[in-house]
Image 1 (cartoon, helix red, strand yellow):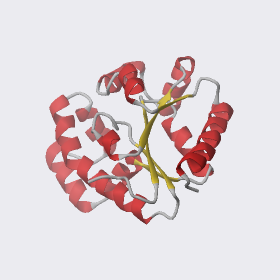
Image 2 (cartoon, helix red, strand yellow):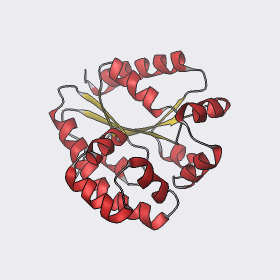
Image 3 (tube, rainbow, N blue to C red):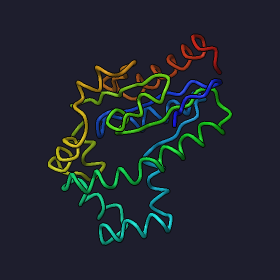
Length: 196
């Protein structure tokens, strides 16, 4: 399955945990792009009876916090969960992108490169977080530093994501600057790719 379609520009958006991916995604939506979040699709799937039944059988519960607590501590459990959920998420995203009227579609995926989905898009953007804001972001998300490091260890190193990316978006200058960068990118995409 591929995400690309002949009449759209499909962009993969990723970055490490707490990097500002969701903020960047919101700016793309504000600039007229169709946006879809893998995390949101997973949350929707968690509300379906078949997924709840499967997760309860595997983890004793389908509550996201319980499942996350196990998969971030047990690599085999994480692999099992991803193997089950990833095809479903990809199919839902592809369907939504295909049906969207917008010519630019941005798919936010924390594990874009790890899942190999970067090969299914037209180009890929990595969001780089501001290390100075890490403690504030941890507090806002209700995560400990230890939990953050444990989750980060399950992702590809940021340097490798940067190496693979087509475009790097830094959040270091703040939200307003990020919004301006996204606005300029959208205008450039419209001009270069002839999409609006």
